[in-house]
Length: 516
Image (cartoon, rainbow, N blue to C red; front, side):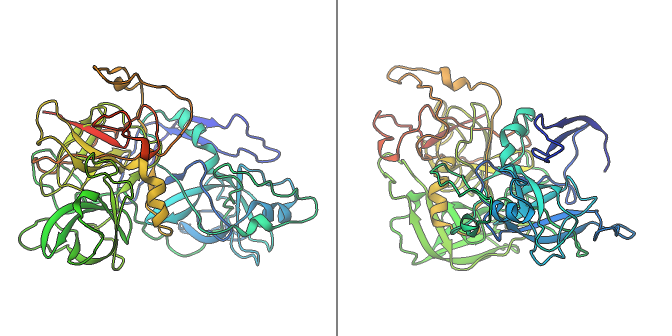
């Protein structure tokens, strides 16, 4: 598919002499239709960390080596290269060459790199099942020369700039993390200033550099929040197989107890109230299941190795009603078994955001109302669509009855638990996506007797408010194509202080309203 370009935006601080801020945006003349061969990449969110040695892939149709063009039929090439920290990259390329807006990658022995014709192309790394773009091919001294890594524009430095132009259907920004210490922090050479250690989150993160092309064919990737078989879902009808590939059935001694969502190959998220203890005895997880009764040809079942309940879960108030289950063995992704993306910290779901809840208590589409959605199985997912990606905003928690007028269901707010989830999942982490809602939120002006006034603060991400409970419904599973929404909190409070206002709904909770 080819299309013309309606607008080209160059970074206002691009410096052609130093290649600093070497990044641009192009708006297409018309939207493209996603297929199995045309899909968007996730972008590294602000504060992402790419330590020395992080594996990266660069793709393009550039030269295969210096002075040698790609031979016909000029098939897309790919090459794998590791990240080299900015300190080491500065020492190799010349101190002062590499800025904080750049990331380097390459093999010190040479032989692998991006080259002429690859400029502007993506450098990506895989986090769990998600490919995240860390860099844009920018410059280098020659191609694939020893001790001269390629240099890339660091995507995570431009999240605000990108979002300033893309106001709706924004890209999926994913927080990329590297575990363990970064060897680059101790690297030094003549003329290189000492490393300044600060407590600022994301400071001193190593950047990814350029990558070369290879002759290996491009492989297929799996991605969170993608439903290859979700071609149509209409409220009120049973969901076709594969429509919601992250939906799982939690069973004890063979009987269905609760729903849950697959968040990577080894972990499932559900509600804490589904469990009387952390004992794994008798528990089993069924994935790819379509029917609770009868045959399920695409189903895979596995036992549970560990159950983790949120330490601040309160069974009286349903605050922090969230749990993690580690599977006994990793599952293989198929068209019927795939992970969902999770709403990142700070995600915003305004009043009216469309949400979908699935389960064998039935599923339905709802709109957010300052905390409202539909009802399905306890522990099951509530998701919204952002672009081509489905993002889980809530975990079904509780409600007063089911689908009663003026009594929205209540869900645990997933975005409040990113740090808690990542504290247990150290590798192959879930894909966290920053969900955004455009325009003002009507809920900010809502008031009633006893409700404290809204406190407006300018602190970004202050506190660690947790997600709250959500309700289930009896309508069948349906698919949405509407933009996803985000829920906002008045003021973030520490979990132990969430109930000080004696409200039934706190900042760890999101409510959903069922559109009739």
